[in-house]
Image (tube, rainbow, N blue to C red):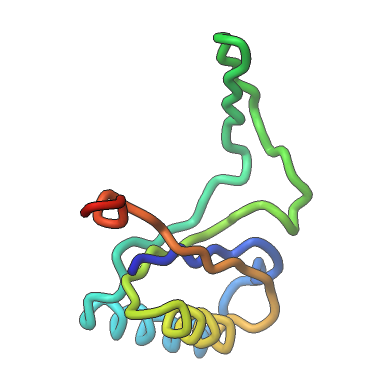
Length: 114
């Protein structure tokens, strides 16, 4: 199962050298195990795309309160939601205070009859 772990608030302070080493080791461990599929930070300015009545509009961001904006993500492969949550907890133990979301990602393999 794939899960998206997203950082949505807090955790905007730079990591200390100790935290950087711990995060580097955590990322390396997950990469070697084939758990970490992708990771990155997101530009909070983004673009808002809306389709309504056949008309598509594009508006420059940002759009949400800073605490609601997704600023970073990790796409992981986990055996269960519980495992994904444990990995997220490990992340937050390294970076400290902040907020995030863990959501299952569905793909073609999840379609009925697949």
